Image (cartoon, rainbow, N blue to C red; front, top):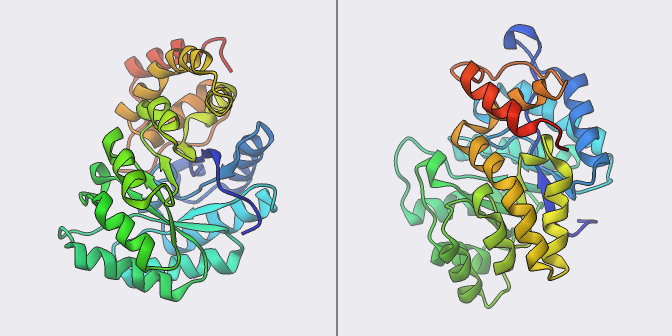
Length: 294
């Protein structure tokens, strides 16, 4: 991997053509170019923001190819390769590797609640199939599966490719426990937008977020302030950003980010059904948050 993974890891939405029938690659490329040019330290397509669960395999591959080609090695590309089965997670991870991604991010997804033995084997199987570093993504709110800090550190210790963790429970004690158990060796990244300031101050290597689609500069400034130990400045930036961060999480990231982009003059289409566009009341609220801000 040519680039260290640190800082603002920006999550683009997946734009669709009118009617939502196919991925709009031109708009996706333009959106990614904007994120890179405004200073994102890494690009992470095909997470929950990118509606990965609602894409066909052909569409998944198209997003990977478009992202890697647009980024063109300027920053790391972290591809969300999660799927319901281990077999298709491996297929996606292999495709990402072949396309030129730097890291794959994997969330354990299952209709049945997985045991720790099953979670471990899922990651071990993917790790054996690819050479890329794996970011373990813990987000029980969306997957229904909660990976304990103890299991995260065990996988980091025993599975070579498992090299980092995106922690999205919103519980700062989880990050503290990961740091304690690994002796600070396991890099962790904040995936809970409202928790970002506490997470960065706790030592998170970066912030995985869709917020740079709407307000890139404050996200970069917040990270820089923490890196420079300017806590007062970081608190000021966070206080300004916090209402938007809470709003996009509460309203669902694909729905709110796509509405926000539209309000800012970038039409990326509606979210794919069963997701719906933002309702009129909340759209007005979001418009007020974005008015006159960058």
